[in-house]
Length: 306
Length: 252
Image 1 (spheres, chains in turn blue, green):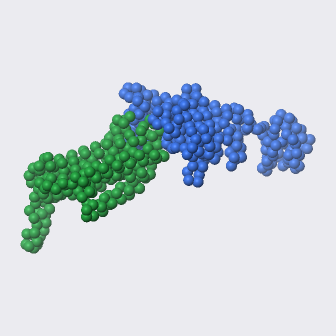
Image 2 (cartoon, rainbow over the protein chains, first blue to last red):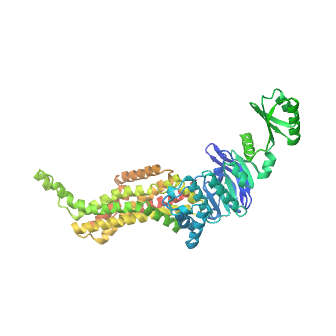
Image 3 (tube, helix red, strand yellow):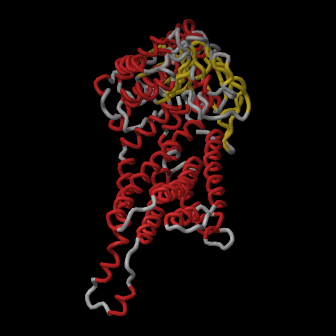
């Protein structure tokens, strides 16, 4: 559905994209993650026809983006990070009289689609209000509505929920979930909990390169090494040195009376560590097995890359 | 698609009051020109204790003065209005992010430029119509009827003349990333054309000659400025083509 091959883009001395390749399957919701400046927005801009790569190629539904004109753009819906509108138009006018006709939707069909989308994004009550008076959250909802007017096969969403309150965020994520299966969605976001919730696949980029791409669950299984967190009453004496020497412990970090132990195999490690703490009579306040989140995986991978 | 872009541009002119302001200023310019021609000498003559030798120097106003005022005022206010109206049309869209929103849709970039140019020329034409009507009516009232055919040609030549500045400002707005830079570019182009127009031998090729030619026609003069018309139309077409080409190549 979306295919990117070795995209390179430089702005002066900055390598925004450095051979980025990725693939998004039809109907998949693809979480596009990366620290600031990793190249997410540049990728979105190239896919939406606003920027040209220095080299490399990209396809949307087998049509090449670099060469594609209006025909490629007719297939996609784009929500930029900060959507901008003509403030003198009302919300309904913008969708019905401007965006819909650009996709060949006119007359009664345009009016019906505009009202439908305003209801979906929760803006029906302000349909006749000028967009100039909209809050940032309302603009983001409006941005989502304009991206969906023509029922696109591919949606490019750049931080679609960053300006929304928790209730608005939930509504938009629910809407994204309803599109799963019929629309391929490339979703760039910093909110990893949202990616965990709605994305089937995750790609993490850093310094313009894809460092990992996998199904969300497989990624967690592959990279989310379990952790054991131990908190004691009076410190660890020599216990942490003993723990470091154990073959099943890969790393140990300590902050005051709390230690985090990264282990290879959780169950034997759990037994051995608990027994040892009991033997050495160390008063334990908390012994917890932590299952790392996507955030932990993200931080681990991007920090390693940095 | 082009009609949607055009409709948006026209509605924008109306809804943001730009069209109303433009028409109002042009109407006032048209009406005030014959009035100034007629009453300025009377106002000067009414200055208390004016020496008789000075009073005798004040000429009796004629229709030529009305045409002269009209051409001068339309030229000055017209250029200023055209630059103010056009300097933000592309630059502001890029600055605010609306161009990026629009150009992710199946819209041709040249179509965007042409819709803006056509709307600008339409607004200019509407302005010149009210300007000319105001001038014609007051000249008829205060002096005599202007020769309709040559007055029409004068206004068509003014349309081409101001159209050159509109197209150059559109080009500056397309090349620039901000309205301020676009305005600087447009005023820069104006200064260059004015300087070139004041140079001997070159002046006959400059757009400014169109206005003199038109005014001469109304006042039964036989001078023409065909080279200036050719250069003006060429500049106009080149500026619009360059604006289209520039936007086609730009990253938004």
